[in-house]
Image 1 (spheres, rainbow, N blue to C red):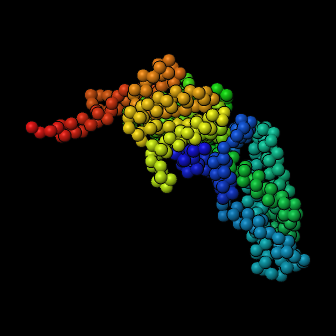
Image 2 (tube, rainbow, N blue to C red; image 1 turned 120 degrees about the vertical axis):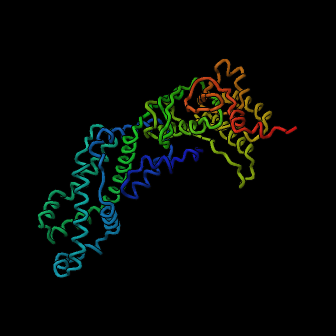
Image 3 (tube, rainbow, N blue to C red; image 1 turned 90 degrees about the vertical axis):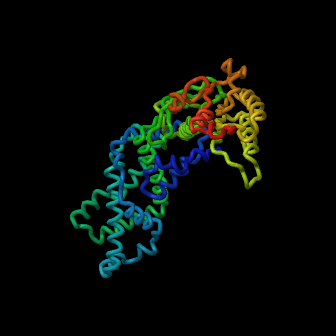
Length: 425
């Protein structure tokens, strides 16, 4: 995957990050940055997230004290019988005010935290909306909390009747769970639970949709770039596996390609996407070549970087991998004659890989004269631009066909450079 231009692990992650603890946040990062390789895995994650969304009224205000959680987590992680369950523990707690305070604060903090999580969230969740595989995780969390007798101890704490014997009872429960590695398993499953809650809150907040995973071509309805404050939505269905995108500078081609890449990537990992509806296949590789720079470390020029990127993509597609690739202003790193010739060769050649999908944006309007464009073998789209006199207005609307507006010349003349640069007689 070459998706650094999409900023998945930074900007896009922030749309889904409502985690309350570090383990859940780390797991969320792993989930959003790890491709899924099988359609069944994508669909299963969708079903799990749909289960959480069906319970969103319960989870919308999901929260707890992060300090309490961190201290309880540290207590359980570092717990040992030698340190916390010595012989004569009850007597030691009775004679040592300091020890009594430490044990009371740790056990009370744990009980109150677990009681909140259990009564407000876990007990309220309707498990019928979840796939059977994930119901097991929910049952484990519920059983784990129940084994602490949280209602009983919480009532004792609330009524100021929580005594030394109750502290010892809680410590013995922890000891038994520690020996069975049940605490470690709980932390793993609960972190995954919270990561799912976090993703679902993001999907709900931003009104994202789940795409239908198919074997056909890509279809997106009212999709947009989720990091824009006032995005323009567009819709399209790919008529071919090769799409030529045209439009003047500043018309939004790069942003559009990024929006498509974000939708496909998120859809392919089972997340909701910024669109009203979508159908898409599972792609084995997604490569977005948008903001290319000269690769100074490797010694490659801009043009050579483009060539290497294209070669790597074609090699993957030739191995029957289903690829999605976007090339923004392909071959702008060479002269126009070379760029035109090799762009034609590239567009024709990419038709040989019908299982993959390729987007190529270009200013080379001569490409629209190709026979493959005229017959519809190569699909063409453009981003519209309205002209009022010599003033361009960018609509950011995607339309079928191609654009031949020469916005560079218009802006050049609008700034008066033609007259400024005219040779004086």
